[in-house]
Length: 402
Image (cartoon, rainbow, N blue to C red; front, side, top):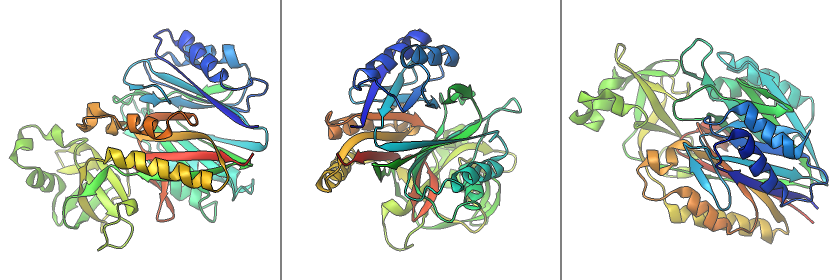
């Protein structure tokens, strides 16, 4: 019987934290044969020491994971501190396939192409996929974002259609320090990596949106890469100031991480929140009066709406419970869940009064393990195409037939 165990630690000693989390995770499994280990910790930890601590308990098993801004388990959650989590999988009747492509910095298209060239050779159309890639490019000594848009374009050049796939863009803190990653039995960085599950396993996913339309439609009339330079023929920065009011003129940095634009991939005149892809402003260019976005797909001609942040916490709990009930009604046993949560949804950054992690935990109610982490862009399919999302939570439930 397949099993999954999760462990958590907040110890400040990185090696001891890794060992404590791994030992707790192992307590929920037989320990006879660990087929895969997920591991995540914040950038406050020494990555090598944390990894050694985990390996001191689990030994030589396949590892995948890296830095995260925080983690979520059934009974714990936290961010910006020394939080870490380990998930171990015993998969008696499934097969695990792992793929790695390093060197994503300023090379996203080729990275996606080469990674999914490996995938295409494996004939895994029915697999459940998790894709993780480094968000942080500091190869030139300053921060740049690794973009998902060209990565996905490269991938699409190698595959006919997207498999059942979710994932995240990884970071270790809100200052975007370099990201450490683990794959196989070693450390890496600036990498895209994937793990696929075949056999007796299914993955069901829901996207928990965090924004709602707050304006009529507007159009990008000039752009350069991830920078929007004009909106409706007006400098993009002036457009944002006019919308937000004179208060931001004294401190233009208030615009950063606040302005969020939404693309409706469904019917333009039907409000269906599940069809929206949100794009957050991560910087401003005062010289060109531009808005620098978290992705590079807000090209000239793109129609969007300004989005209001906020999510219905009770709806989060209801939607997860509905998904679990559907899976169980189909005769499948929930094995474990992964929760990819935008770091901006945390109360410290969202101005929400309560953490959405609490409602995820309450919805699950210890019926199966959950392993979640806070990241810089969750990945899920919207309108059939893989997207990097902002201000969303992606909840994936893995289930088996016993």
